[in-house]
Length: 195
Length: 195
Image (cartoon, rainbow over all chains, first blue to last red; front, side, top):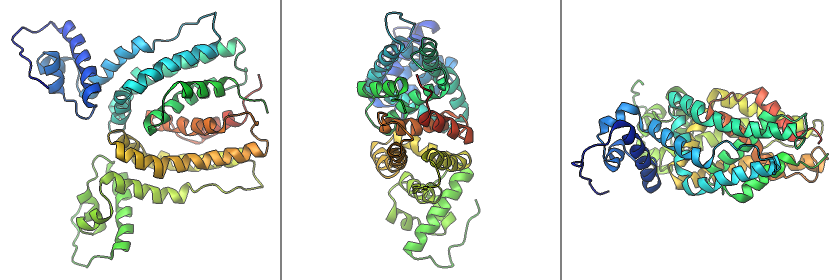
């Protein structure tokens, strides 16, 4: 990485936060989670390390925040589209997420890994990131159940866990996370053959 | 940890391997993956570090091997029991695994985490550990399908991934991995309500 001159003055804190998060994502993609340091992020964002520590306690917290903001763009909660079945809505939602993960899944994998070594971080990761995303799928499946696309007796919470579990399992195990996976998951969740 | 005298002579290599694996599991439970060192394991097992490096290249390899051997005792492939439904066989199989994971899940979590930082290790972990375990469940579900407990049209591979994904997701996310989870997973896999 090239050294950047910091003589041009430092942006104010709020602006700095945006620059820091962009720098974090850029370096994560280029070097992977393990090799990214707070110092490199500060340098890339052209801010003092203290500016960074004023806002985030650890690298994991910063990475979580940066990814959290980014996922807002590609994985916002799907609003109900009355022209599409819920099945198709879920399929499209997952395909969008999977396309992103195929390219940029490493930071998410690294966050899940980091959470295993640090109970406090795991709680934050779970509360801020995992559970809100699980709820998006649960809500969509509930709508499907209300519309009769999924039978009343089925366990929506468990189906939502099946959806997330399947793609965590593939992502962490190094299996493809792609359109085929999205279709297989959704197909089995919505239309099991009848016994 | 107390220093142990090594003057009593060293067991031969094959015996040493057993002692090393036991020591590895003991230290993992006491201190967690991140804090266990090769030196501490060698000391606990009363062997020279070189004995250990003769057989395993890295801590991750050793931990994988130790856990692999241990899981053989509590998670051997379930043989078909004609007196039990496949549903009940799967439920019992998962309950046995979950009971163990609730107590000693930390090393498995640590292995999954370690696999995210190291592609070569992830391949070994996947080939030696993850996929054989996935196959145990897939085989059981196929038997269930052959017996008519699961309908012909259902996607057995995906159901097997749902089973594993659900408990990886709970384990890594810090949710309970217990009898209730086993029952919920199996209940939803075997008996979805009819649409």
